[in-house]
Structures are given as C-alpha cells and as structure tokens.
Image 1 (cartoon, rainbow, N blue to C red):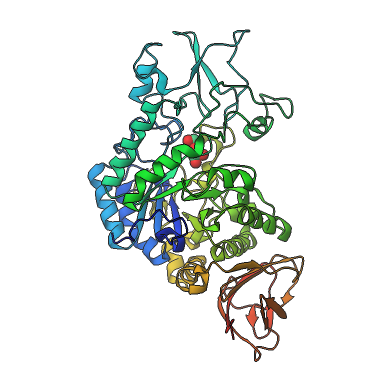
Image 2 (tube, helix red, strand yellow):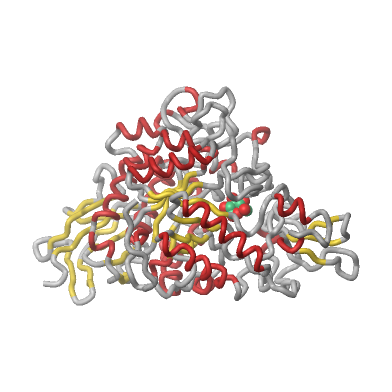
Length: 550
Ligand code: GLC
C-alpha cells in the first residue's frame, strides 16, 4: 500500500502517528470454516466492520502453527499459518483485502519463548551438544539441587524446569511448555531477522512484539532481590510482585535487539509495537527510547480504579517520561485483561465510563487502540468453570469469548454446534449488526470518536498541555485547537472560563470565543451540551475552540 518514504529522522511524522489501532483476538473474532474457532477467512469476511469503525491498523494475535497450550503464544513455526486458522495463501489474501480498504496489518511476533514443539527446542532437548541447545537458556542446579536461581514465572511457580536427561534446568518465564529463547546467542538474532523479513516480504505493515520487556536476561542469571516472602500458593500477580525484577526483565541489552530490528524494518516503513509490561513510566522510557521500538504500550490503565486522580496519574506519568509522546501506545482493553466496562463497575455505567476513558485516550499524542468488542461496549463474558480454556489459574477466558456479530446461532460468530469458548452470555443488543442499525449505539459513539481523532488537525498537533485546577473530579487537556474535558465525578460540572496558554475560552458566554462540540460520550446530549455548558457526571466532551491564535 502507499507509504511515506521511510526515514531515520526520529522527529518525522510516520503513518502510525495519526492511526487508530484495533486488536483482533483471532480465535474469537469470526469463524469462516465452521469449526467453532475464529480464523483468517472469518477475519477477511468481517473487514467491512473494521472499515465502518474507521480503524487504520489491525494487530492480529498469533496465527502460527502451535500446540495451542497458550492459544498460539507458544509458536512451533514462526513462518507458517496454523491449519486451524488457514494457510499462507489466505494470509496473503487478508493483507491484500485489508490494504484495499486502507487498513494495515500488524502480526504478533513471540520472540521471548517458543513452544516446546518448535524444532529448535526439540533438538535442544537431545543434549548439551545439540546444535540448538544454546537457542534456549540452560543452567545447572543450584548447590541444593533445586532451580538455578529464584526467578518465578509470570504465570506463577518457579521459572525453571528440570530436564532429567541432561540434569540441567531450562528457563521459562511463562508455562514450562514455553521455553525462553536465549537472546545473547547471535544465531538467534540472525534467525529472527529471517522471520521478520519473511513476513515483511509478504506485505505485513508491522509487528506487535510479545513480552518485549523480557527478551534479554542477566547473563550471570543472578537471583532477584526478594521484596516480600515468595508464597508459591499466592496468585500469579502476588508471586511476581514478591521480587524486584532486577535481573530477569528490563536488561540494558534489551533495547539493542530492537535497534537492530528498527534498522531491518525501516526500508519497509513497518511499525514495531512493543508489549512493554513495566510498572513505572521511567522504565517505559528506557525500553522505548525512540531508536528501537516505535511504540510501546502503557498497561497501567488496566489496573486503575474509577477516580479522576487515578486517571490523571495513569495518563500524565508516561506522557511526562517519554522522550517523544508519540512513542506511547494507549490501551484500556486486551485479550489478557478483564474488559473495562466490567472493571469500571459493570452495566451501562461501566460502559459509559469505559467510553469516557477512551475519549481521554483518543485525544492524546500516541497510538490509541481498541480491543475487539470494545466498540460494542461488551462486558466481560461469563464462562462456566467446566468450559474454561485458559491454562492459567486467574482465567483470561472472560475477555476472550466470541464476538457477537448478529442475532441467531452463536450470535453469528460460527455455524458450529460448539464454539471453543461459549458466547459469554450476550444478547441481541450486544451484536455488531444491531448496533450498526442504531444511531446512538456504543458502536456509533466509538465510530464517531475514531473519526474525530482522525479528521481533526488539532489532534495531530504537538502543542499539548494539561488544563489543571478546573475541579478535582475533572480531567482536561488542550491539544492544538482541541479541548478534551472529562467529568469523572458524581455531580454535573458547569464549564466556565478556561485558560488556554495565552488564550482563554469562556464556555459560559460562547459569544466571546466560539467552541464547537465535536463529540460527547452522552449519546442523547443529556445535560452535556455547550448551551447550557454543563458536563454530566461520568461524561467527556471534545471541543474545537475557534480561533486560538487571534
Ligand atoms: C503476552 C500475551 C499473553 C501470553 C503471554 C505469553 O502477555 O499477551 O496472552 O499468554 O504473552 O506469551
């Protein structure tokens, strides 16, 4: 598809700087062949929905051959398509069909670990002299015969499994069937260069890089300092948080891997989008300095409560820390986290809050994303215990239940009698077709938000400032000639005079400076309007202020 001349000038404008992203969890998006599992044919069939929503880039979760222990995040072959999902020809068709609609395709690459079924690991297991032994991280037992150090898996339990045949342990920061790859081995770097080129040459527009914070490990495999006593029976989060992860993640060599990839993808004008799980904005700034990953996701919003203070701090921290705010990827939802309308209290109130939060994200510099179903206001799906599929204890199934497309069998997701996960308890008003027919539906509100983001020149401006002191419950900022205001409190908030840099706007007397309401989360207008200028509780509005520079 048409693209800009690639450039190494980090201040230049790139295609993703004005894009809106969308995550497709392929297994649950749309089933084209009737086996109860989403696939590439299904995705091609539904591309018009994504065009109607107006998104520019679609990140697709892993579609590679895999034993599916972690539903594809355990890759057995990095350069092919799992037969469940289609084949390479269908992949090419997808890229072509998306490009025809002006949608770019970003593939999910999983470089931190492979499947234990990957030929590299199968070979590595044959013994210490195997050609691919050093593609993985092996260590002798500690003096007491136990694991080599105290590292734990993100999924809970020790991060080491003993290979009885050789007497050595191998490292896995996830499941034992997801052995960690050794990124200090130059052969691994070369092998992944080939993988990236394989997909770039097929026309891919970028990569979402799984677990980007953890590829490099401490070469001496030192134990992490313990912050609190490790309880092997705690939740996976409690187990992980018991340590200061000084040696297993965020190693100084990490960004070098992405510098190398940056040089490799530049001629293709492709995006490197990191899954960058960190706890602090300064860590994100280190991992995404600008010359490696083009964008790194900030995941803190997944854990916040509904309060203006929490929202303010989760947005302000990374914006202040990054060398360029366009390095930020903004998400409120993913295939790993409880859906935001449920996190924010459930029901229509939770849905409204979720849209308010997205409104704040969509005006910011950086790359905003929606996760499939977010545009329908979907609550977390209900999955009975006997239908659970996720291998980990704190199940992620509820955010992965199938997309509801239209009323009827499986809500249009699949013609199969049994789908891989149940529908989650949707009703007809949750479906895309119903919502597309209703002008004030969640779909149309998200669509309108995407459109404002893409069409307002002010929202491409680098002139950004927070508007402080309006009210403790109000979060607001100015970008170019755009003002975004959100009222997160329980009381209506009357808009009055707002100072904007050298200018001011007085919403209470619109005659002095004109302000146009471009978007409101309040479908009916409700008490959110410019005349009278009052923001309803839990609402957000985007205004264009005219003129700013008179
Ligand atoms: C990432 C993925 C998650 C997967 C894990 C291991 O966090 O988003 O779904 O389980 O990596 O690959």
